[in-house]
Image (cartoon, rainbow, N blue to C red; front, side, top):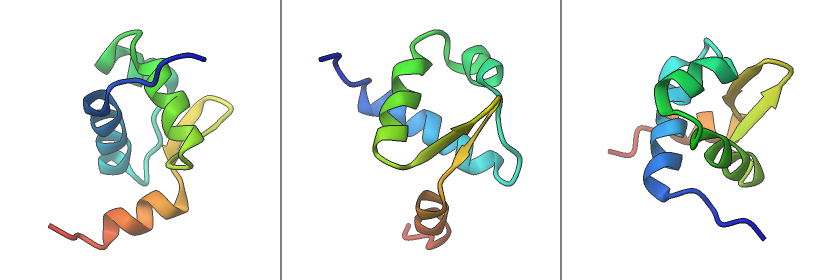
Length: 73
């Protein structure tokens, strides 16, 4: 079993993907921003149903976007 990525990296990746919505990011965009460590974070966030990765585009799930739009700050 592979270790999960750090919460800090997962928060940063999800935050960027949500911020860029409705634009979707490519894997290359995320790699440029975060380096190779981004892949485990993407896998973890997909497993938590917060990111979707379709072909060459990565975006938030409907649930992640709905929670983000609640603006609970």
